[in-house]
Length: 280
Image (cartoon, rainbow, N blue to C red):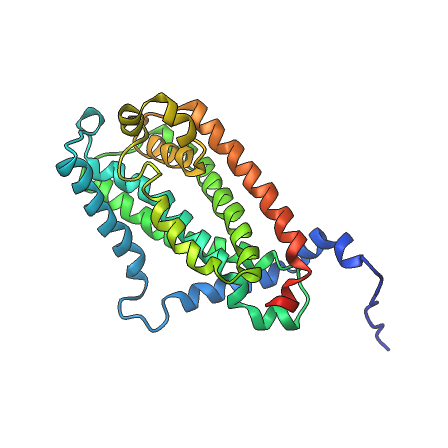
């Protein structure tokens, strides 16, 4: 007769083995991520093309605003569309991942109220799902660079590092909003505002150098507290052969803010996690 698996029930066991359970439930992580990928563009007319249309339209509009309306010139007469598109890459990923993570627990309410598993799997899977849109937008960026006959160089090798920073920023803020959204449903109205407002206080329409030139050095110290400043500047620097400025101080500030967001986001999420099943 085959031995049955041993089941241990003791107070605090789930707490002590939380991170080990997180690894044990990795298949659920893969399942939730794959399900979200399949559902995202289900029953849409043009399907996955939406991942290209949104950043492309935004790039056209912001290029006109920065180049034609504001009359700003890109460094070394580089096409301004490439600068804007290089900024849209991380911003599109960040905004999508943060939004999906903030709504992930509410969207999986039935699962969370019935089955035990580390709840951190849910927002983490939502963030990873946004990589699909990022890869599609990255392909669009490559097509634009080929159109303008602008080839990258060794700077591109550092792009994965800035991608990790974008991932950390999205996950850190997403964990805060995710937990708060369960406790206070009003936060679902705050997230779209954060996304809409955030693009105007990030170097997407205008580069960091242009913003500092217009607003002065004093403002730039507070401006660097936006974690996406260093990320977007890094993307532009890596993709565009270092032709755009990358301020080391701003980058280090962004890294510090992202680390703080990740640590506090995990702490607050874990603090509130035990109440999710009852409140949701």
